Length: 84
Image 1 (spheres, rainbow, N blue to C red):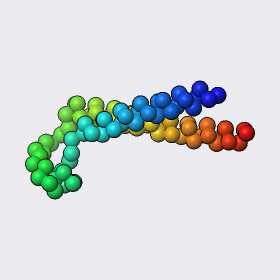
Image 2: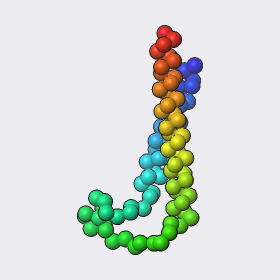
Image 3: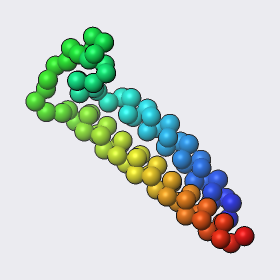
């Protein structure tokens, strides 16, 4: 049964790296810390492009998989602690 935990940990590490990369790929909306230091020049577009919408979808999908791994590890740990 430890293969399940190792698999979840591997998926968790991969999705953590992917989630970090996907979040960093998002364009800043302005008004944050970056605009305080001179990065506030931004063009306001009426809508988001297809690439941005797909990036949002991928980020949400990877976030859901990441969250499922966290919950799965928590449940596995609870079962493993009660079983021994």
